[in-house]
Length: 356
Figure 1 (cartoon, one colour):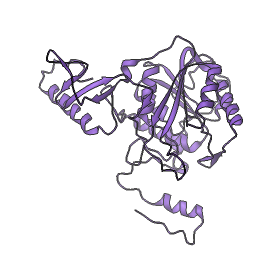
Figure 2 (cartoon, helix red, strand yellow):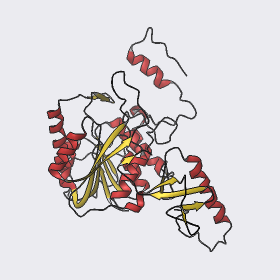
Figure 3 (cartoon, rainbow, N blue to C red):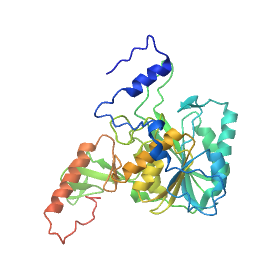
Figure 4 (cartoon, rainbow, N blue to C red):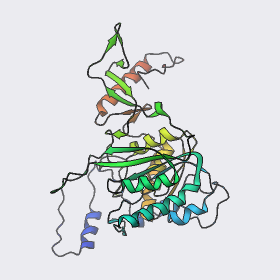
């Protein structure tokens, strides 16, 4: 670990020293400074005029305030909205500070941005909104004014320090709502593969589970409590220096459940680009809006990386796996490859429960 003496340095100088330090070999954090990211910034666009259609904005990162940009996009053009707005906390995003508001003020802020995205959603479209426990009720109640609220997902965070006089905050919420009673939900696409501890058989055959070379598993229906999410950290290829980045696996669950290949996904608070990156990896079209140019650089850098690497950690061969099951995922992949090598070139591995 490197210690930087700040005895005779200003806070800005200390930060400069730390940023200038070489990262450890295993540290994959994307933190390209704005001064070195012009090549990525040049790929972003600004939208200043009303768009007749999405031709000029599809698969683009838009630099700007979503409250200004959204009214310029065509109505009824988006299949899915994934929004991760600033939580009601005082937090700095690359020099821009979002200050904690009174509940009534945050409610009005939430109503304002939801009013801006509502017209963009198709009649059969869905919206997901991330929030913390303090603002969850506010977000849910405002969503009810505009949409049909279907569920509240709670997901477990791994990170976070303990509190001296309160319970550690280890959970966050995601509200799921739709524009109408006609909406997409692909249940089979988001089942979770879990290890079977006490397998049950009927007439000697597995019941509701599968027997594989690497263990016994069951593909279970997902609930509204997600305990299989890992927050990106320094050794993960998807990790950036953004302070509130969501994981690709989390976004992939939402996207696979509530959209189809070729659908258009909008993220009005793009941040470091996770929604756009996952859309690219899952054959969706995307529109991302982000105010901070620094985050736009990281988003475009990650989109470039996705050109040659479409992997999503925790999602392998069309299946979501439990957290901390990498060795099991690798074992299944190796077994599948081994079985494939034994077949003649013209033969194809059948798609069955064991390998999907």
